[in-house]
Image 1 (spheres, rainbow, N blue to C red):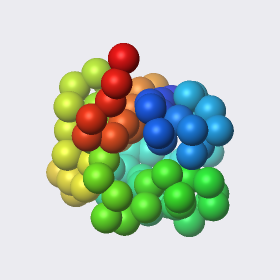
Image 2 (image 1 turned 60 degrees about the vertical axis):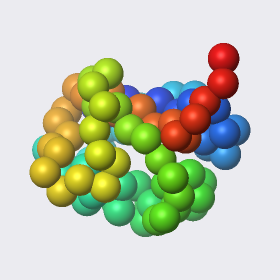
Image 3 (image 1 turned 45 degrees about the horizontal axis):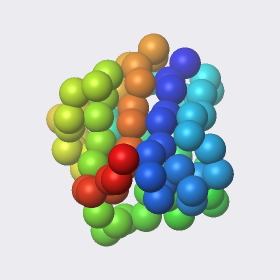
Length: 87
C-alpha cells in the first residue's frame, strides 16, 4: 500500500489530507506514478497538474516530483505540497 499525503492548498484541492492506494503495480518511477494517478482520478489530475509548482517528499526525504530516477515502492509514504506553505 502507498500512502499519499497532501498539504496546504493541495489538501484543499484533494478534499483530504491522506489517501491510501493499494492497487498500483509498485515499484514505479515517481513520474510514472503521478501519470497513473492523474489518469485514474480527476481530483488527483487537478492536484498533480503538469506544470503546477510542487514539492514532494518520499518517506520524509525531499525528492524531485518529476524525477524518473526516484522509485516508489509498496509501503512508501509520498507527500505533496506547494513550494511555500504556512503554519
